[in-house]
Length: 155
Image (cartoon, rainbow, N blue to C red; front, side):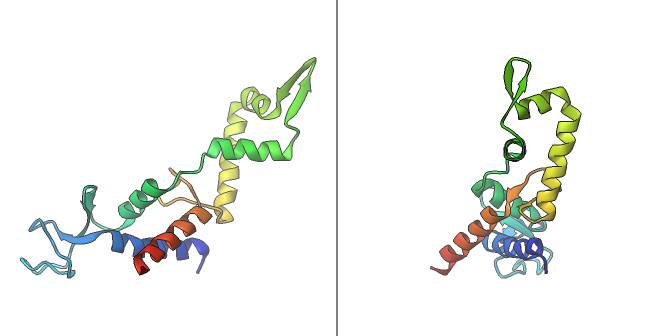
């Protein structure tokens, strides 16, 4: 099992802990996993004050957004560029930021390189997205959050 699958499974467990079963047909909580009123086990997940929906992916997204800062892709990429190339480049008599030169001289190339950089981080399981690439989080931050939540649950 990959690191991503392990983390996703842990986040799913956390989502079940943070939400409760809810029968939308009867509009009642069903903490036993079956509606006491109609007997249905086709239940949504309810997070008080947040919402109600089927599945746990939306709960996972809410937990991550609530507790973690997403990866600032532009800042992370620029930092990587500054680590690989000289911070400043001399153009004529001017000393300019290498990253700024690259960014302004060919914006398309810059965006493609940034996307490839994020993809490589995702392949290496350093960053993870649970909303099809709209938002990325550092894997170590997610692991710390899970550990923190599990410790809190145990005490």
